[in-house]
Image (cartoon, rainbow, N blue to C red):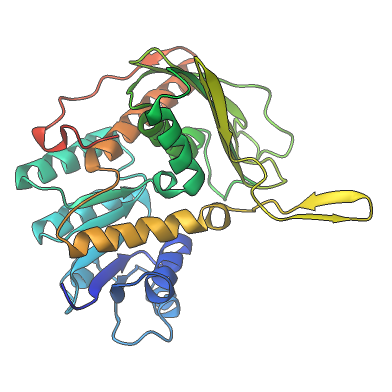
Length: 341
């Protein structure tokens, strides 16, 4: 493909607007061809100053717009299944933000639809796979120098939760990133989950069970724990430590500028994910554009999206039941054999 990849961006909210900026100003080989959002005013604001972009309120109209070669889905999770299936029907490659589909049944329908096509069209937006620190940890674990991984200790903290954030969303929205990262880093499936709840923090909204401590078991005999705290108040922090038979490795410590003055050292703390993972998002979208222009699909697959939704559902059940819940996936289609994780 010699011409820039024409991308239809679905959703012009916080995430969608940032991807529109990225496609226009950061990524090479692509351009924004169309935008769809139920709020036409928000969509027009997101593409202000961009030439040759059509604005729509309906997904179908955006996918059918002139110059659209591929789709980036950044709309709310419940809208993803319809958009993915519509893109598949047109043979359009897709980069879909997580969750691919919040409910595992819908996620499985997407997997089955893509499998019927006989080729991958979807990449799911688990951007931590493109973060430099996570990449180094993955290479270290794959290299075997530290021996067999025994445990992953993970931390996921946000300054404050948005309005309407529920106790279940701590798992199926926030911890979904750790679910995918654990599967990818370890090369193992998560088979069971338990959720423990300390006394809610005083700054947590009324009724929100925050923080939570989530414990995953894997089919390789490892344990993965996640402290998720979405109203910590002091910053956005994502950390991961791998404990192995011959050593350990930790990422996500102080990776910002340190200023020493007046007898003290001060470090900036990112306030949201678009700051902490800005480079990862840039690399993710560039990799998607490059692969799509070659007629290929890379990164997290639709099967990975389904696996994350399935494990998250088990986590929500564990939160509600107070017990240990197992994960029972459907048979994996041949299309995804050897490509996931």
